[in-house]
Length: 436
Ligand code: KE4
Image 1 (cartoon, rainbow, N blue to C red):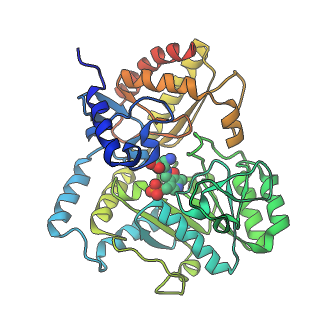
Image 2 (tube, rainbow, N blue to C red):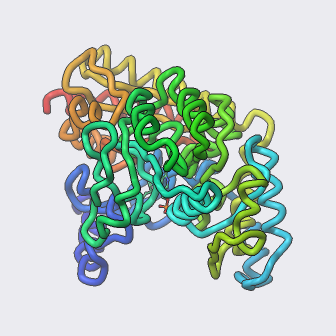
């Protein structure tokens, strides 16, 4: 019998000759779980098939975009029709207005939208806008939050308050991160102390309203409200990076779930339905600063391109349908409850949580530990045990994020049977992981 992942391993060998690390984004290289990455050949609904023909129930869904599932018929049909009319014009189309109107309808705080081509572009541009609008230079981000790879955001978070950013990657000059302040996620005292020291110079706070890039870490009660008050008090903008949480925590994003009114919102992933897209959006008065309406420059050859627009429109229309989002949330609730119960019964300490269509599962070093920040994630999570679980689940046809420090996603197409099959696999995989 040929080895289960033989073709993927062969493809990885070939890829490494021509692509740094064999991939086009680091997390795909499986450094977080070891072994060679699984190469994907095709997807349909809740599933994808790898290069060896193995089928997986997919909980990564391209890191969030595919909330309608892989190759949704309505999305594919719309793409086919649009492609036949032309793929890009570098000129305005009605489609951009249509998608902007749908985003504005679904996210209460948003009055105007600018489309770009990635989440990185969205956050980078939103921060430039905040600096242009306020005339200030400093920004605050939180340890463990990831907002894409723009220089000013690749900041090694110091351990305490008022940490002036140190670059987290070679190639990022110190001066580009010197105005990036960092504080601990879910620690309002640290944010308050930064404002006490730098308040008048702070242009914006940028945050993942539910952290999905350190594992899955919801905000503690009152935390987001506290940041909203602090930013209002000091005249700084509150930017919600909803590239991942947008349309996933709730149809109106995390901001509607937690009832917070941010000044700017960054979007991506779901609004492109699997095609490259990002957006920054918010109050009209602020957005009018963006060229050509105002002086802040930002541009993009393929921004608002017709293919991404139609894929985004069809994807959002699918989750707007009566009962659609509730169905996805019910799947997440069943899966997280089932995983939690298995952890209890099998004596494997887990921190399992989910909101809307997103969830996460930390393997804890000891029962009773609780992860609410990046420091706690690094201290309490057990990546080795997670890695064993990951491969045991992959061997059983379930694909999770190849890192303990990521979130997981469910789509409209995940069935009750898929959840049951996932829990059956998890029972065996947890037993194997328990002994690591
Ligand atoms: P992109 O530039 O990758 O489209 O978006 C960057 C980004 C911005 N903000 C948030 C909250 C994000 O989660 C992301 C990207 N998410 C990662 C998943 N952890 C994408 C996966 C990858 O880097 O390959």
